[in-house]
Amino acid sequence: MKLWLTTLLLLFSVSAGASLPQELQWQFKVLLDDREIGSHQFTVSQANGSQTIQTDASFDVKVLFVNLYRYRHQNTEVWQGNCLRSINAETDANGEQFSVAGQVNDSYFQVNTASTEKELPACIMTFAYWNPAFLTEDKLLNSQTGEYEDVTITRVGEESIQVNDETLAAVKYLIDLKAGPITLWYGARDFRWLALESVAAGGRTLRYDPLMIPPSGNAQALPIETVVN
Image (tube, rainbow, N blue to C red; front, side, top):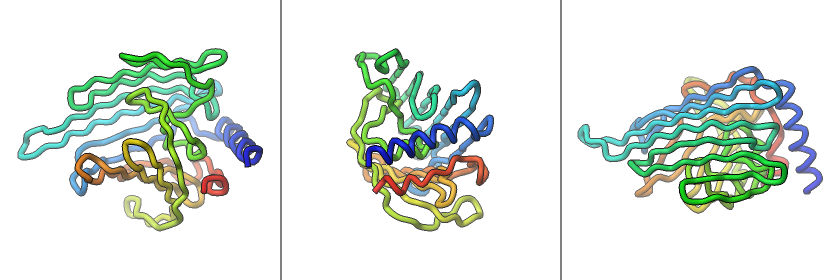
């Protein structure tokens, strides 16, 4: 299994470097239960053999025009293949400030937050939803807190989901982690990231519905389901 997994990840890395368009974009509207509260955008750019991922999230939960919760998150990551090379993230979670900065060195990945400094393995991944290779990981770096979190990722099965006005066959995955489960959907044929759902405070449902995703054929396809059970 380990050899087979390593081979698949190597193939994905080569494929990503060879065929990724200059820029891929995901734009999601974010809903809390059925109420729209904001947006989250992801832009993946490629140049000189590396990928730069920029994310920008903005949520506001209001009741009778009173803002009860405000969330802002900006993050820039640089990747080479399936290894994170650097990260710079700033988050305002309802007034609580988070900062995460990290960079790879010769033998480890250095992560600094406002309160901690730590050395992680040289090749790590964040919750890189746009890259289905992350579904093979059992530890991921949280770009908001800087924690290197234990995760269990399970392939749940296949189902149809609605993306804009189109019904697509999708593969469903479940991420179990300390903060609560995250559900993800990927295109069954091309493994484009399609949607996300998680549990928010009070048992409410936070969902990402796509406004823009890369066209079919522009995202890398890899049969990850063969190694993620």
